Length: 123
Figure 1: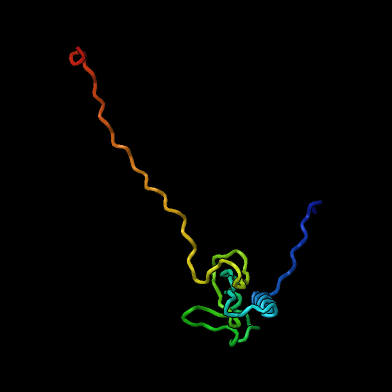
Figure 2 (figure 1 turned 90 degrees about the vertical axis):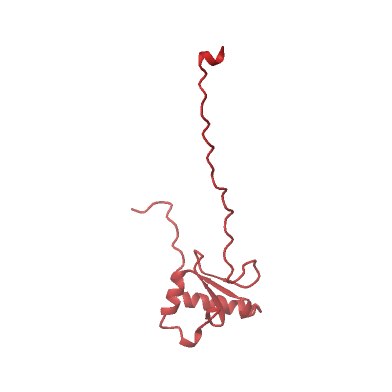
C-alpha cells in the first residue's frame, strides 16, 4: 500500500571515494589549497574508501599525522555524514571536541540529631 505522502527517494550517491574526489576537485577549481582541506568522514565511509578496489594505492597515504586521500587530510568518525571542510570554518583538524562543563558533585547534608524535649527539661 502506498501512502499519499510518500517521500521522494534520495538520489543514489556514488561510492565514498567518488563523492570525496568530486568534492576535492570542486574545491580545487574554486582555488582552495589541499593543505587547508579536511575530509571529515564517517567510520563507515572511511572503511569503504580503504576497501574500494577502484581506488589506486597511490591515492591513499598514511603518515604519523594520519590518513590522507588525494593529499587531503582525513578525520575519521565524529560525524553523521561525510563532508569536505574547505578550511573556511572554525573546525580545527585533530582538535578534541570541547567537553561539556563538569557537574558539581552532589553532597549530602549531615544529619542533625533531634533533641526531644522532656517535660522536666522544659519546666
